[in-house]
Image 1 (cartoon, rainbow, N blue to C red):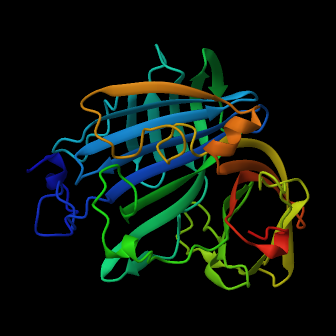
Image 2 (tube, rainbow, N blue to C red):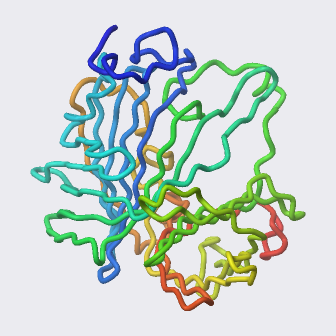
Length: 369
């Protein structure tokens, strides 16, 4: 299946670009964006993902306002050309300049969400540690993920209301990842791992946060067991855009968080800290401003039946909405991306998503089961 992508000098296997280096049906290649307005209660999540071994490419745009979260999603057959990221229902993604500028479009006519947004990088990308886990002899997760902050220009239409988007007040981050991950609708029959309930123990506390300040980006990420052991511990400062330098490792990430005991939602008064470039400890106070729910029809699970990689034929498109003022609704569409104002002890003021999940028992914050 030779395609236009094969004219680029980017091959990593002896086969055409259309064929992934593994036949694992869970292989994926995805863009994920978060974005917000500093002056309005608007917080959005965008995504485009290709699943070569499922023959599907899909996309979604989900916008949380002060009362509801509106999501439009679409899917089509992938076809032979992996460079073709247009015509996913109303959506399309263009890489205008690699690691610098991308354009996400979606016609508003007849749909809950429409947009024409250009994302421009504010810092160099940060590579997270490689993802890898195995159960018995099977690779369960293996991939690469990078984080990059930026600013948006264009417009956004949600529930019929148009918002002009300018880079001075519309900021956000992107999560670019690819590899093997347990996502994609086609499931295999249960085997020995399921029968014997084998698998990697899930860490109770998860934190993922690209912190975007005016003149720097700090990525803070932890995966921590109840006894304090950590599987992931990342706190890094991105290189300045175009500087030609590498990211800088900061150190000693810590957290002092407050949660609603019933919903486990992050509350005001939370903070994180780290050892900064000059050796002093910088504390960042987190003030939640707004929340976008990851499972509000975006394909990540929850009450909605659509999942990433699900085959829906050619040109499938659909819109859903969720009342995010109703606790009965929000309890089943979490976890949340919490948009926070981030006040550092250095005097810097930043903004960004603070994704936090607490699973099961974590006594430090009052959760016993």
